[in-house]
Amino acid sequence: MEFLHFLALFSSISLCFLSPSLPSPGAGSSGGGGSTAVFSVLSFGAVGDGVTDDTQAFKLAWDAACQAEPASTLLVPDRFSFMIQSMIFAGPCRSGLVFQIEGTVMAPDGPEWWPENNSRRQWLVFYRIDGMRMRSDAKGLIDGKGDKWWNLSCKPHKAVRFLKSSNLSVEGIEMKNSPQFHLRFDECRDILIDSLRIKAPPRSPNTDGIHIQNTTNVKIQNSLISNGDDCVSIGAGCFNVEIRNITCGPSHGISIGSLGPRNSRACVSNITVSDSTIEKSDNGVRIKTWQGGSGSVSQVTFANIHMDSVRNPIVIDQYYCPNEGSSCSNQTSAIAISNVFYSNIDGTYDARRPPLRLACSDALPCVNLTFSGVKLVPIQGQMVDPFCWNAFGVMETLTIPPLNCLSEGTPMSIPQSDVDRCL
Image (cartoon, rainbow, N blue to C red; front, side, top):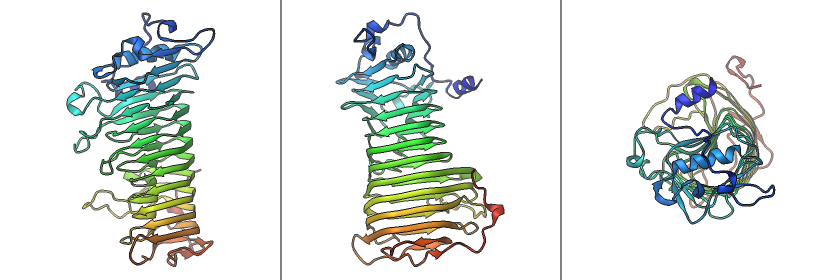
């Protein structure tokens, strides 16, 4: 029933089923004697000229590779550009499947080329996949063709989305110009993201590089991301996330949130961001929550991060209200923020803004904030004092600029009736 419900959400997208007329592994493979079968999309009718619709060939190749035994490789060969419509790559498949992208996979070129009966909310969806590697050895590219969507009022698609999947890796691929998120994981676990190159123009809206939601045990590393929104955004229900060696920017930085919209509950913990550079960005490392939410953010570490010309290097914003000119109602409930560690964060900032902004809830203070080795200086002009509101913690070393607004220790009392901590 769950799968039927999922299909109903994407009724406009045809799902792949096994076909008795598919080529055998030998028809689209190389090797033998127990070696991995390789299913090239060219062997299933793909043209790869960037104009012809190659969706059906990808469906046939996926069906064959998904069920091949032993585990196989679906190959998108180099020197070809394959235009495909929105589709679902559905599992379960044999564990060990490799989705090898060496050429270019591209979306239709804007709304006028997007079939009316196809969902515009999704492009490439991987559903219930376990043990797959999506990778490239050289120049594999996923091109979302988002430039003609960015100024539209309608919400366009995300480029690549993994849903209810596990034991996945995405490695060595370049992604560019998604209408919205480039790479998204929902309800997934045990994820490795390594050596990606993600890029979109600085003013492209909502083009997050990597977004995770209700996803656990994630490693994101060794990647270059520049776009018009967060390089990495961490949504509700995420635990045990390690982000390291990321070069981020221009962008909106690396964010936890936004959390708690429409009075929702969010639980996030055990997040580490380290050994990274954020450059020419609106924000550096940020925790953002809406008023009225519940739940908690805890056990977060930001360490060994260099800021280069960042407008707001360190931000906690519990009054998040993104639409300029709109007003968000004041509410007493809030997401509890505690045990956040900032260590060895240095670099330059725009002197028009405070380099540290700790705007915690009126009703529920941030507690156990720890600062060590923070040194942020203006690009030009005089140093700006940090801003704190209801923020409690400790400075293990002197910060630059001095964080005199941080309240020491812990608050006298915390209204437990307003604290919905996550177990």
